[in-house]
Structures are given as structure tokens and as C-alpha cells.
Length: 149
Image (cartoon, rainbow, N blue to C red; front, top):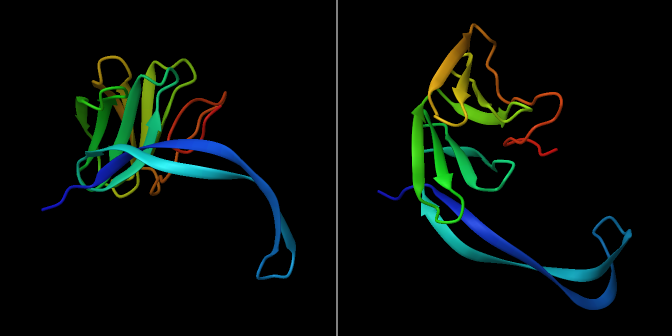
């Protein structure tokens, strides 16, 4: 059985001559540089990786493994699994609180949001009875799988 994969990618830009071309809608498009993306490394995750993001310092990589009902935390440099937190059904997206002390994880099929301690990865609380939460963001803006500050 193959496992889902999270990829680490590198992006590099290199100069190119400016090219003008017609799009299929007949509007001119200009390109002043090309982007090359290459695979650095891939890792296997639990089933159904959906929301993926780094923490603010870029030291941890978090993966919401929706089908496995698990939040996975990896060391971002070594890509080694640091922790797994059991969560609800179909947890798609997450965010840190603005002070980075907690992780808020939206679990659509179990109709709840899990609040997890961002240092110990222990569950703090579950907010139940929500209507299929899909995504989650905070104000002031914080790091998460939907947006970065």
C-alpha cells in the first residue's frame, strides 16, 4: 500500500529574455523570468494529508492527515516525525493562535474544532456542535494551512 506524501520543494528563478505571447483569450502575456521547481525530498504521511504548513520559525512542519484523523508534527529540517495528535473526522485546516501557544484544527465531519497545546501537543479542549468547519483563521493573523501573516 502506498502512503500519501508531502514534498519539500525548492524554487529558483533565473533570468530569461522577455517573451510576449497571446493567451487563449487573445490577451498578451509577458514573462520576464522563468521559475524552476525541483523536488528536494518527500516523506510518507498518514492517510489523507490536506492542510500543510510550517510554524512561524520554520522549525516544524504540520500536516492535517484528514482520513487518518491525526495531526502530525515533523521536524522541518530532518523531516522526522516529532508527534502525532489524534483528532476528529476530516480535519482539513489549522492555524496557530496569534501568540503561537495553541493550534486550532477544524474538523468538518465531526463538527468540531480541536485546540492543541503547540509545545506539548496535548489536547486542551474540543469545541463541539459546529456546522462542518472546513477552515480556520485567526485575528490578528497567525501562521496556518490557509494563510500566513
